Amino acid sequence: MGEVRAKKYLGQHFLTDESIAERIAASLALDAPAPVLEIGPGMGVLTHHLLANPLVELTAVEIDPESVAYLHAHYPELKLIEGDFLKMDLKQIYGDRPFMVIGNFPYNISSQIFFKVLEYRDSIPVCAGMIQKEVAERIAAPHGSKTYGITSVLLQTFYHIEYLFTVHEHVFNPPPKVKSAVIRMTRNSIKELGCDERLFIRVVKTAFNQRRKTLRNSLKPIMQDRKMADPLFDLRPEQISVKGFVDLTNLVQEILSQPPSRQALPTDTAAN
Ligand code: SAH
Image 1 (cartoon, rainbow, N blue to C red):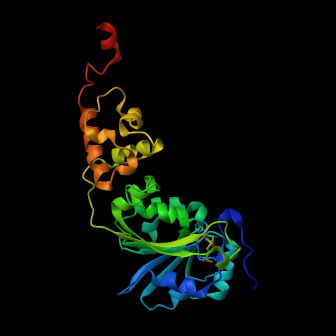
Image 2: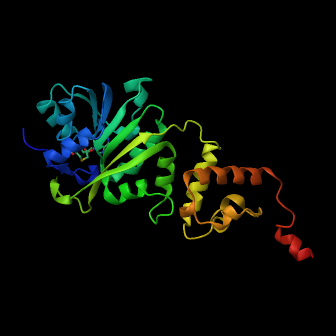
Image 3: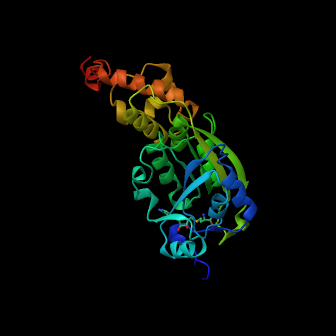
């Protein structure tokens, strides 16, 4: 059976370097048997290293029927699910058992993969894999850095992020236009955020929508005419740590729970 024809719309760039595949497979750093879910095995370059590890209890999810046929032919022992990872109910595969996620991910949907991991965060202790280098840098960026943004805050809230290594484009077929990087995310101990989670996400997204403005300006769509006296509102979003965003969310909630200040209303100034 011939090789799978690379399809751009599925983000298919097949890794051709066995030693890198081996390093990605080892990045889970298992010390006990564990269920592992591989997203997008393609032609199985990473898969066969995972199958060779007796600690890995592997299931793979692949959307491309041509890759699925290839995998069935070459790895008949592989537990393979044909379908779209993003649409899958992962509880149907694992129930309440925790599982790890790995892959040389399709770059066109990497953020969506991470948002899904966040959704299942209490079942996913570790997620490791290859993504576009810039995305990896953004996810790992600490506050104060220029690339710190929405995905950095949301993922760092619940995961410890490690940028493991950079991968050059020439080890893929076809080579992608960008460099790649392997990261590992390990679930931290935060169970409860300490603030309203929906408001937290809204505050983070709204603040970074206008990342060069101070929070006093960027948060107007949420705060409307309310007074923002606290010095926290003088900052820009990239200066605020995850913990800072939790405090900010609580502050925003407190201000929103009070009736709008009379002095803040433009009609008052007109009347005086
Ligand atoms: N792991 C392989 C392939 C990487 S390319 C390698 O390293 O060579 C990305 C793979 O993800 C492709 O096989 C592609 O078909 C698959 N894929 C893309 N979108 C997917 C989705 N939504 N769900 C599952 N697999 C997907």
